[in-house]
Image 1: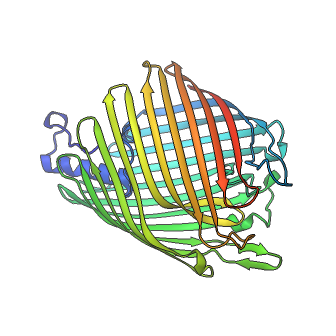
Image 2: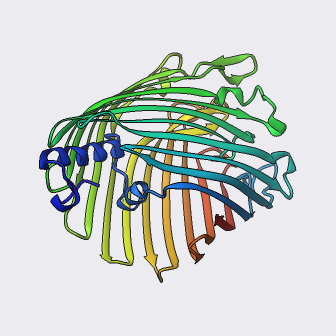
Image 3: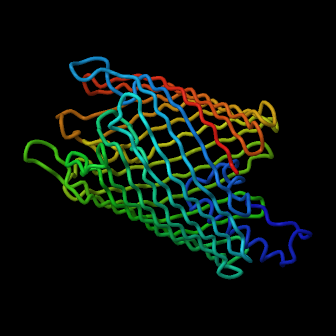
Length: 421
């Protein structure tokens, strides 16, 4: 993404070509942790036209709701979930304007927990706009209605509805420098079974607005250095219930200064890093305030054309879909291996341990809470034909928590079949 087109590939002057490359790189990284090489290459691929698709998946989970096997509460219970999805994707390039869209409907059916059945949909529209030789923009509208994530086993949320809006402008005022400005709004709503509004879940609903302005430096080597200033405001429409007749607001304001970089160490290795100073203040929960240094580090190594190793380390604040919390400080590790066994058979093995620190109390206990999560997965993708794809996933997850009787373990196996018309 970062390299300028060769003279034979472009009739533009070298400075203009360099600026265009810089604009694409700045748009792709958003001045945060850069997107990995494989994802960036996929994102740049243009498949013009309309592509209808259909997929069906079957998942068996030994502990669907992440319940603990100890204590007097409900015991773990397995379930089999069938998921179907129908949709179409549009990708078109009109002059220098690229428009992408995706519309789909999905259906999730449970064998045991039928009250968690969900009919959802997804709408995504993105416009990559060339507003001039030195200015490019990205505008996106996204709406998703799907199964709510079960992160900690502390919530009965069934559906999650998210609406996101993004506007980003990149001005390449110099062949090696660009200024980026971005505004992103995300609204999340959680529902109970049968699409009911549950008072116990409304405290999870949140509206977030992220504003970013920054400067990116991209030399001819393809490496990158960026400085960004970010503000994040989180508004929770409903107060969180902390006890009988007691509630509190989770509203917060966050400021962040981030330094990010990409270093192409060699033809087969790449290092990415982002370090930021973060300050977060809550309106009514000062015990959950946070001030510290967060980071994201990623190293990629491709010894052969068919194998890739990725190691990532991070300390960051993440959102948690939990009735007793809204966010947690996470220390994360990810080790992954990608292997193209053949041109049609792809293998991925991933190990993801992380520790979640919940500032202050959790609303139901006077003790601070720490969760240690571990997720291991093996993915095998077989491209039966250029249009037919078979995917198998084996997953193991586990939690150890400072809360009593909340540890759990689970195994899941999924099989998906997708056809693109």
